[in-house]
Image 1 (cartoon, rainbow, N blue to C red):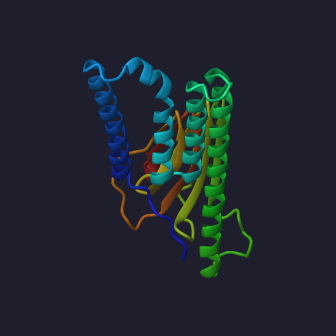
Image 2 (tube, rainbow, N blue to C red; image 1 turned 90 degrees about the vertical axis):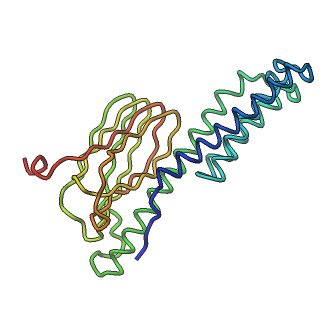
Image 3 (cartoon, rainbow, N blue to C red; image 1 turned 90 degrees about the horizontal axis):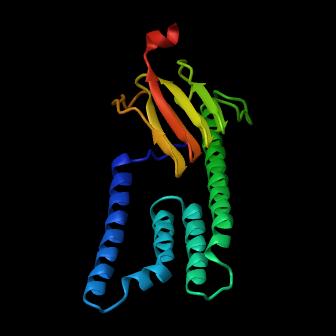
Length: 233
């Protein structure tokens, strides 16, 4: 049976803290060298600040989404060439194309993840003899909010595979997802200047799984749990 690896929230927080710590240490060293009159911090930061973007992209590529991380690193490289005056394009002229490049790559990556998750779910059901071949619509749901709001309610009925694949896309909008209380959540949502809020309740390891995929861009995705009595009402 095909399985997907759940996201470890503690590991994600640790990775982010380490990355931020390295950035702060680097800035501290530069400022110390500036006070010692070894280098000029203002000139150094003015020309080399895109190195932070490159580092963030490489960090993301190693610890998270390879495609998104590489795209961010490429954009940072172009910005660095511009600040060092190695290309004629200005920083401002590169920002909008760079943002579109990263956002487009994020959407493509999110779409690929949803398709892979759906295929794995259908394959699991077919192996168990509980689905017709090609039944790609088994136990899947989607919600999209672009400059608006969307709401999705996951049914209380337990699917044959014990797993529901949910695709959520929020672009300058809000997506609200309700799941049955006690069900486990696997967060695979890509964030681009957006927030994903998950309930903190502890679930039974044997309970059904809601597998969250998609992307949030300058928006918000909030997942809440409802009691069985609320679902029956």
